[in-house]
Amino acid sequence: AQTKPLAGKTAFVTGGAQGIGEAICRKLALLGAAVVVNDLRRTDAAEKLLDSLAASGVKAGMVCFDVSNEEAVEAGIAEAIKEYGPIDILVNNAGISLDSLLIRTKADDWHKTLNVNLTGSFYCARACAKSMIKARCGRIINISSVIGAMGNAGQVSYSASKAGLMGLTKTLARELGSRGITVNAVAPGFIKTQMTAALSGEHAEKLVEQIPLNCLGEAEDVAEAVAFLASPAARYITGQVLGVNGGMYM
Ligand code: NAP
Image 1 (cartoon, rainbow, N blue to C red):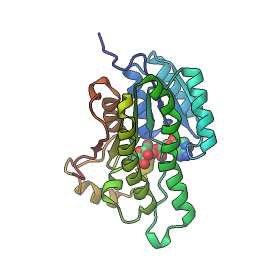
Image 2: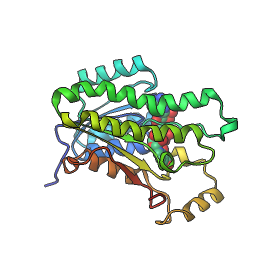
Image 3: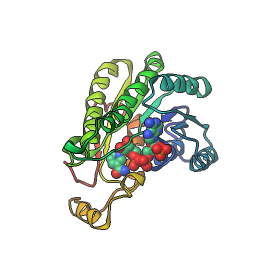
């Protein structure tokens, strides 16, 4: 019989309607977790995802809000907890990149990126932590990026936001460890999604040359790492940044 290590758990995945977030939702559901998908909009793709999550035999639902809106996060997570029970696994995946070189970076774009990628993760973690502390268990997994560790010319606000997530991860791991909550980050390299679709042929080829495993990653590769960190097998792992980057950064 197939084992379902996350049966009885409820997962909340931000920005879960497409790309890496969608793959994470599918994988966690496959492992038996009830999944609450967050995203900005309930798109047709989101409806399809919800149908296929439900078809895999788990409870699935969606709560739409902008993670960078403090009040919306508080209300949205309270609604999710009311409807689906306390959240056991929070995956802070929602993210944007507004790329530019330093001298061309507009303050507005800087703030937008930091607000979604970093502040949004803080809001969601804070909103979920109360019930996790009460339950004396929980998993928080922040989707950072290889760019947060190594930097990248032209990704000023994005790299700062993703490096910030690594610091947030480590502090939350220290604060919440005694309450049975683990906090880790997954730092993907270049993964084939909408976010990287704009990479041109030549640019993509140059990128691949720098990756020891010689190819871009798939959203499922990131989902596997998240699923591991969410699983009972990872109970003694906290405060870590797990790279899923084909060896691009070591
Ligand atoms: P994606 O395809 O653009 O998906 C991101 C999702 O987040 C979208 O559904 C988007 O909704 C949603 N979102 C954006 N802003 C939001 C907000 N304020 N509140 C709630 N949801 C919001 O990106 P992805 O490639 O799957 O990336 C997922 C995460 O992995 C991001 O944090 C990204 O930085 C990180 N990452 C990606 C790569 C890569 O190579 N793809 C590499 C390293 C790290 P809309 O489409 O409606 O805007």
